[in-house]
Image 1 (cartoon, rainbow, N blue to C red):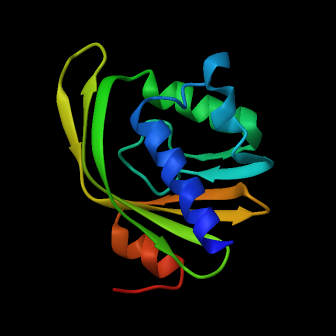
Image 2 (image 1 turned 60 degrees about the horizontal axis):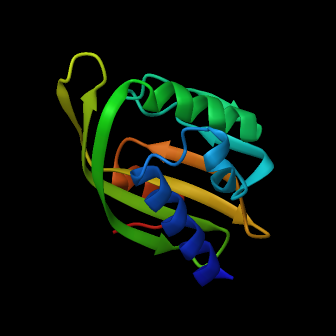
Amino acid sequence: MSQENVEIVRKLVERFAHRQHEGTSAYEPVLEYYDADVEFDSSRMPMVGAAGVYRGREGVRAFWQEWLSAWSDLQFELEDVVDTGGDEVVALIRDQRQWGRLSGIETAVDPYGIVFTIRDGKVVRWCSFPTQEEALEAAGLSE
């Protein structure tokens, strides 16, 4: 199951890179990766205008609509996907840049991590951390 979980995370991050989380009906297949009662926690991310805890698929949709509406474009690199050997998978993100939709100003984000908890092929929790080290530690891993 661990390799399947890694592939789920890779697919979600890839879809995020292509802005396929914006919540329109064309992106409904993305929401199918999330459990109906998913907890989506971006509260630790100070650079996220939509920081908070969102619940359910509608919460995920609301987060992405709010956050992505601020940016005309974004780019980042998926540095690694780390399998914990259990229900959690850590995505390590670096070199993220985004451009303000209205201002055109480019902003950069320090490397960060996301811990995905996956059960029965669905994301039941997504938790973003402001550093890769914090994400790895939260998942019981350390570099």
